[in-house]
Amino acid sequence: MPESRCLQGIWSSPWIFIFAAAGSAIGLGNIWKFPYMLGGNGGGAFLLIYCLCLIVVGLPMLMAEVALGRTVRSNPVDTVNDLAERRVVSKYWVVVPYLAGLTGLLILSFYSVIAGWALAYSHRAVTGELEHLDKLQSEALFQGFLNNPVEMLLWHSVFMALVVLVVGQAVTRGLSNVVRVLLPTLIFMLLLLSIYALVVGSGSEAIRFMFRLDWSQVTFEVALSAIGHALFSLGVGLGAMFSYGAYMSKRMSIAKACTIVVSLDLVVSILAALIIFPLTFEFGIDVDSGPSLPFVTLPIIFDLLPAGQVIGLVFFVLLVLAALTSAISMLELFVSWMHERFYIGRLKASFMLGLAVWFVGIAVVLSFNHWDAKILFGLNLFELIDGTTSLILLPIAAIALSTLVAWVIPEPMLKNEMIAQNPRHFYWWYTTLKYVSIPAAVLITVAGWIGV
Ligand code: PFF
Image (cartoon, rainbow, N blue to C red; front, side):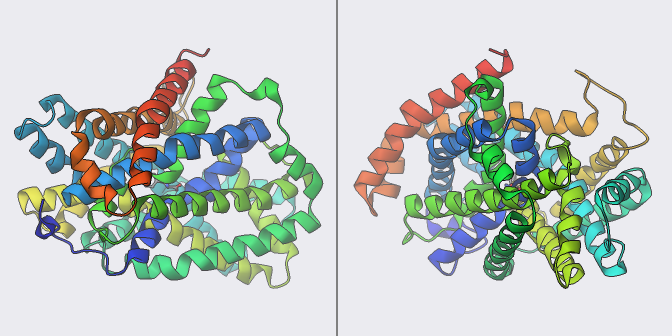
């Protein structure tokens, strides 16, 4: 398809794609979710399987999404519709991008609530409420916050408003400039904090927990959590990377760009865990305490640091920005589709979708306090949306999108796209995707579901 189909323009420099894709990948999934997933899934075993999933499944699937996006220079829904109309693929494949877009919206409904926690903690850092907290006080502060739905709703609303406003503008404008500054600052800060945490906390215990492999913990259920989180963390399977690929310059090597994105994503997750676990062990916080883990632990380290309140404020603001650069890619798929297909203004499309997500978010807020009812399988609404998206919808969407690229779309279509840079990259990627990544993802997902 001609480049003119790309309505929003091409990234002005090859590096900007990396910044934008890394901006989408790096977010709450790395700093908030990864540590507590690691804590809840036995440490070293999860880390090992997670790394394997990133390399063997995540990276090739990420490349598949980006390659298809760059080949067609359009949004996922129109692309698959177009391919179906031209009888390149069967019309049933049209379900896949809708599923991907819907999964993104569902994720955003709780993602925005958690990003609201980071906003609330930025505010608390300004008002001094995070000062002089010991473990019990930090836990009490967080619990008090969870018990206050009005405050949670306020911050959820602020975050959703920000997402709607940013997505309302074309993504190529502004976003990469933000990420260009945000990413290095975030990594630098995480690095300093992790060194500090390793020194003042129980560093050796944390390292042992994170890197020691206990084979008894290696199960398909842990592997399913790892693969689900790898896809979540990279933002694969939701068409977001497809959209960014659509804006990518032909000069950039997809293999190189995606490898850099995956590496950055992993580095940030490990640094976050290296901050959380030394403190968790030092202060006797339960490693398996779930979503509250980072929010209880982080204020303690800020309090130990010189000028800790300022550092805490900067950290939480950076976390909000990282969440924002991820959240916008969850709305992007449907917004660009509504804009390109139905000529609805981006801001209007973004507002309509944002409103729907905001409503679901209200129920998520209540599931932390007044409406903690176990709806299904003993899970409340937050746990249900989180579990369904990470363990069921994301793997299905990612496997389906990759199958479309590897097995359904004719090989020459993608070959022409990728071969120009390095033919070896194409064959390596294509074979791995077809015969390793997709079968491995199917095996782990199905075995995890039936609890082998
Ligand atoms: N990768 C993001 C994170 O780790 O926080 C979450 C995410 C972004 C998921 C974009 C899905 C997506 F399309």
